[in-house]
Length: 367
Ligand SMILES: *Cc1c(COP(=O)(O)O)cnc(C)c1O
Image 1: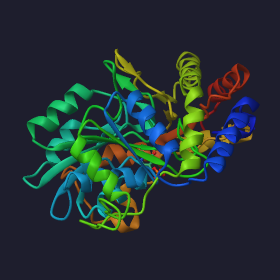
Image 2: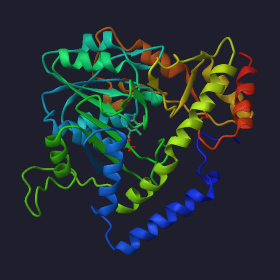
Image 3: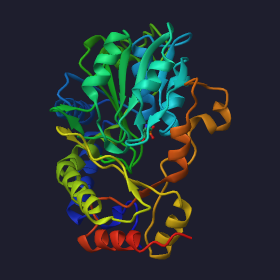
Image 4: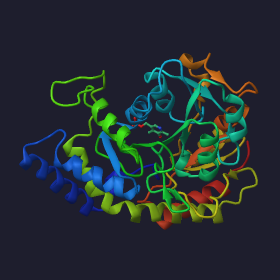
């Protein structure tokens, strides 16, 4: 079976290095908010070319803390996409703000600026831009758009480790970037983890307070925060896995290039190729097919696992049925949800696996 992720077949050297990192934490006798976290925060800030990184419990909390740290909350509207992980929108709700859903561009499945424009009101305070599937697209345009509308740009980078455009890495374009290190992300922990990155020293200090019950110095709580800290074991493991991230990202790109060259089925549409100067990291390789469920069944029969990101757009989730949205509707998101399919694209795949996926897709017969 070709799986969407296969950690058990990673090179043994990775597991040995992770075990050594865990042993180091045990020997230190310090498990939360210690030297491993500080070191990993410095490494991740440097990768993003920003001055500050604040390790938190997960990607969702990173978004909530970014919003709260920027004083975006009750009464404020935040524009985002319905074609994302539920966590993106839940974080906005947890910050007390009002999500407003704009539609996507069908060629990329990323937020449409025309739709975001229709969602903008005098109450809009921020946009949470999701670098879906690992794409970083039209960032100069979005930076300008947010500046013109005088709103904060927050990047959801959960799928975009090392993605960049014009040399700027995801998370460094706007006020804050939110990373997840959930195991299946391009850089994954052995459990939950997240990080907020920012150039803004005030926001970084605020985030450091918010992740730790709103505590400024020990036993002083100027505000109500969360308990959301990246622990020492996960930080040590992430620092270790970081050594393989570049190589694994390159492998994802090779697989994606093979898919782009090899998949020629007339009923299977690929998403737009990345723009020039834009480095896609292929967290997911997504195709679209009107007969998606049949294609998924066909691939399953050929021992190829696939997943759907995402089958239900946010506004069709029961708690979100009344959520504010583009007055022209969210038809493109609904259509994408009905036809998208994520093919296996993980760094442990062999060339033979990749060829098998291509051959199986091309052999698909419409029902
Ligand atoms: C995974 C993911 C999140 C949430 O990250 P967690 O660490 O699971 O909280 C948020 N947004 C997107 C786009 C994601 O893929």
